[in-house]
Image 1 (cartoon, rainbow, N blue to C red):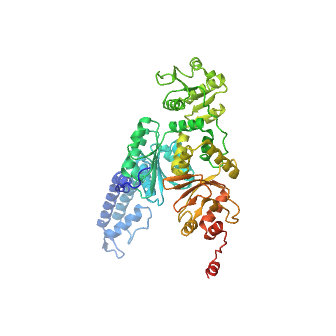
Image 2: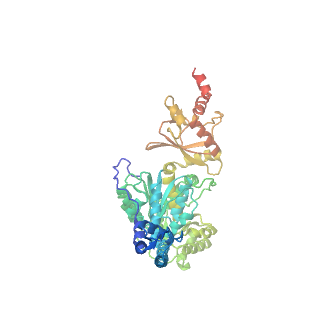
Image 3: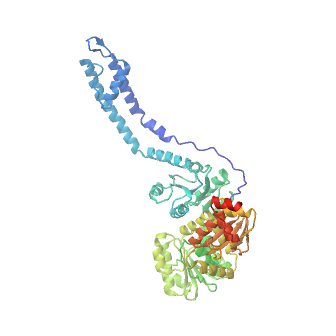
Length: 577
C-alpha cells in the first residue's frame, strides 16, 4: 500500500461532459434554421397582409398577434382566426404557411428521431449520466478496471459486503451486462480504456471518496498503466494489479507499492504450503473459503518422489522451480523446453502417447498439466490416470466453464487463474485483516494450526464460521472504549454472554492488530488497547451478543465486573445518588 504520509498531488476535477450538447446543436442546426426562417417569413407576411376589423375598417396584425397565431397553428392546436375573420388574401397566405410548417416540422422531428438513434449521441448521453452518478457518490468507493470473469466475481463479492463500486471496461457488452446484474447498490459503469488517465479521472480517481483501484483487465500493459497513473496522480490510494508477466512486476513496483496479484505464483505458494505444512494449508483454505463451507479434507501433497510437469510456460516454469526449491526432482515435457535448466527435459507434445511414455509415469508420484489449453490438459490428465491411478494430479483450468470436466477426472488440485485472482483481491481489499492473518499463519508450526483447528471445530463445528473485524474505537466498540478510559480489559473476559457472564461465547479471537504489529490467537489475559482491531471467528448468534456487550455500557459493566447496572434514566439517577 502506498505511503499515506506522502504528499497528495491534487489534480483539477473533470468538468461535466458537453459532448451531447454540442452534438445536438450541430445535428439540429439545419432544422432549427428552417423552422426559425419559416416562422419569420410567416409572421412577416401576416403583419404585412391587409385585413379588416369588425366595422369593416382596414386593419393589420401586430408582430405579437402574428406570432401567437403561428404558434397555435404550426402546433396543430388551431384556435381559429383572431381577433377578426381573415380576408381572402390572409387566408391564402395562411394556407401557404400551414403546408410549409408541416414540412418544416416533419424535417425537424425526423432529425430529432435520427439523433436519438445515433450511436455517438447515445454514447455522449451515457457518458454524461456516468459522470453525474460518480459525482453524486457520497461514500467510499472502489474503481474496478476490467469487468471480465475475475472482475465480475470481485464486483459481486464486494457488493455483497456493502462496498460501493465504479466499473470501467473497454468492452461495451460487458458494461451493458452490468445494468442487468443484480447488485445491491447502484454501480456506475463506463465503456472506456481504463489505461487512459483521463478516463480514470472520469471514474472518480480524484474524487475525495475514492478508496482504491483494482486493475483486473486482460491486458497486463494496461494494468501497468493504471498502476502508474494512480501512483502519480493519487499516491495515497491503494492499488491492486493483476499480472501474468514476471517482467511487469518490477515495473509496477517502480510506481509506489501496488498490491500485485500473480495467480501462478499464488498457486505455487499454496501448493508448496501443502507440501511442507498440510494442516496449515487446510486451515487457511477453510478460513478463506465462502461462509458455511465445510472443512476440507487434508490434501496430502507428495513430499518425496518425482513430479512430471507437462507444459513449461510461465506456470509450469514457476511450479518446477518451486518443486526444485523443496528438493523434489522434476521431469518437464514440452515441445520448446531446452536442457540445462536443472530439470530433466523431454522435448515433445505431452498429448502424444509415445512422448508421455518417456516420462515414466509408473514411477512418478505426481503430474501437473500446465499448458494454456484445457483440451490438452484434460487429455494428459486422462492418460496419466490410466497409466498410474495413484498419481497426484495438478491441473491448470483456463476456462471456468470446463470445471465439470476437471471434476469428473477427480483432479486433486486445480488452478483457475480468474478465480484465484478474485479470491486474492477480495482477501486484500475486502478483508485486509484476514489477509494479514493468512500471511502470519503461514509462518507458524503445524502444531499451532492443529490446535487452532481443534478449537474452531469444538466451538463452531465443521462449517466455516463467520469471520469479522471489531475495531476498538468510538464507532466499533463505544462502551468498551469508554470503559478503557478508567480500567483495563482483557480478551477472555470480554468474550462472555451479556445475559449470563458465566457462559463463554462461541467465539475465537484469531488476531489482534495493533498498528503494524499483530498478536495471533491471543490468550485470554491478553490486554486490549484503544485503537486495536480484533479479528474474530464464531457463530452469528454470539456475534450479536458481543455487539451488545461492546455497545451497551450496562452490558460491558456486567460482563467485565459482574455488577448489573440499570439502563433507564430513573435507575441511573437513583444509582448516582
